[in-house]
Length: 212
Image (cartoon, rainbow, N blue to C red; front, side, top):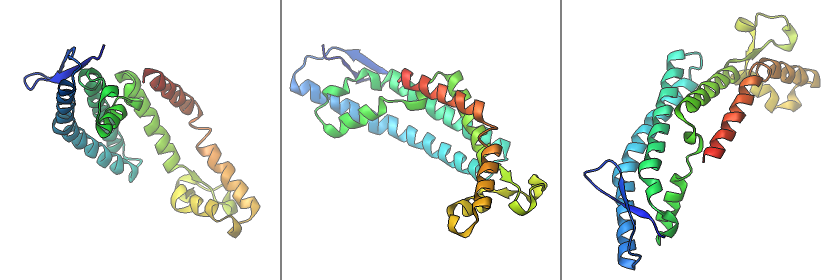
């Protein structure tokens, strides 16, 4: 049975029905799907996505700013909520595998894979908190220079950028001792600190894969 749906302008969701199967009817279904995608979904998604990316940028240029971190997490949670609701109430109502238009079929197939948004709201919030924390640790960690290993790391430590990344990207300009010291110090101040968080991150990624 070929099951899909039609967009009702007076409703907030697609009304499912069983089509007759003739070519004209299938063309009408694809037309309704394209109209919903271009006139309803895409404009709102673009708005939410642009807002989330801007707030993510604001956070990345000021990783210690807790307000920026909170704003970016909330923005991505709202985007995930919209994506999931669109899939539940609209996208899943169309049997896009039977679309004759390759471009429309490809777009609906892409939208049917939710990724991290497939997690329930509590797990997605936890996912965002963990990724935000790991980004902060990774982006703000410092290592004392080789020539002053007992430095005050907060005021004298070498940050990732600029500093550690430059050293590790130009190995021929630095001794093995310095490279080994920098790498070990970096691992100790990042990997060890967020190991348990990373394990939980992987667990949530697996949950999202199953949910998809």
